[in-house]
Length: 306
Ligand SMILES: C[S@@+](CC[C@H](N)C(=O)[O-])C[C@H]1O[C@@H](n2cnc3c(N)ncnc32)[C@H](O)[C@@H]1O
Image (cartoon, rainbow, N blue to C red; front, side, top):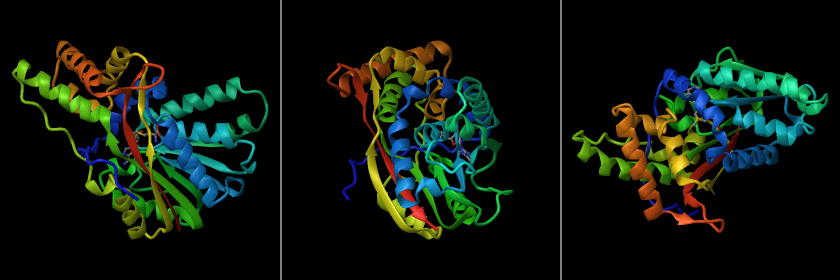
């Protein structure tokens, strides 16, 4: 499998409090993120490696606002056994709080049926990916961690915990970023803005290289004890019908993707970076058939069996 073009490596090793700050914005704007394509593929891969019709328990690690759990219920509620337990876990209590709210509104809105019944079996829990206690050894049939492991303090520990709690033959799927043109564009925008503000340009954080390639992720899964590993690249772009609107959302999101810049600037200075970001996008990005600018994104999608 050929690797996509080499890019900078980003590292989002940030604490739960940082994600707490981002949780409300993240939840409200999840449709602007490039998440749904990788999530769809992760769910397909889980199902094809071990049918969701046999799932006893599904664990969403680093669930954020519950995007994976929501998408999985939406597409597979009729397939899941009526006894399947769903755990949506994150070390950020803000994110877990969002999942509680989503669950409450689903239970309120949905008519009686398998989708509502499945939401009733979702348990949101604050839990660190590196320590999944109190989950028992060999207790979970399916695990997904979407864009999580590459940003935890000790990814080896997180993968070992994932392996520990999986039942024999259970499957675990995860994803990371190989390329994010939105980060590349932000770095260019920062390099153009900071000198004129008389401030040193902060260094863009980096991701450990092993999380940016199929080969690297596959090796890590194997080292944690997974077998029958499969990895692939998936294109997950951000499509921007309105670049200015996206730039504003992105720069004010509080997401660790931007806080390395926004934490050292005041509101007016952030606006300057925002303007430059729009400019960089217009200079460098392709437009799609609908005339919307597209920021390229390439995810590494991986699965393994215990
Ligand atoms: C990029 S977001 C992805 C959220 C979600 N999986 C999705 O698909 O929308 C990363 C999430 O990982 C969580 N996270 C980061 N480090 C974690 C850790 N050590 N344990 C549990 N969750 C963690 C963050 O709080 C955040 O919600």
